Image (tube, rainbow, N blue to C red; front, side, top):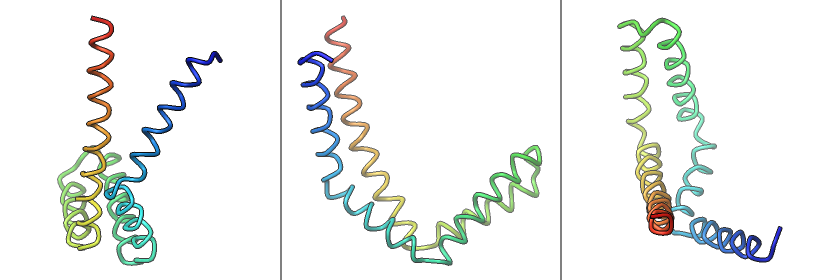
Length: 111
C-alpha cells in the first residue's frame, strides 16, 4: 500500500473515531448496555423476531400479521426501547450526513 492510500485510510479512521465519540453514539452504547439487563425487554424483542419469522413463513397471513403488530406494539411501549429508537435515529442521521458529504465530494470529483 502506498503512502497516499495509508493517509486516506488514516483520515477515514479519524472520521470513524469522531463518529464513535459523538454524544449520541455514546448514549446509544449506554442504552444498549442497559437493555442487556432488561429481561422483559429482551424477551419482547425475541417475541417480535419470532413473529416476524412466522409472518414470512406463513405467506403473510392476516393472523400472523396481527400477532406481529401486537408484539411490536408491546415492544414499542417500553420507555427504554423508545429512547433507544430515538437515539438510534440520531446516530443514523449522523452517519447519513457523512455518507452524503462523501457522495457529494466524489460526485464533484468525477463530474
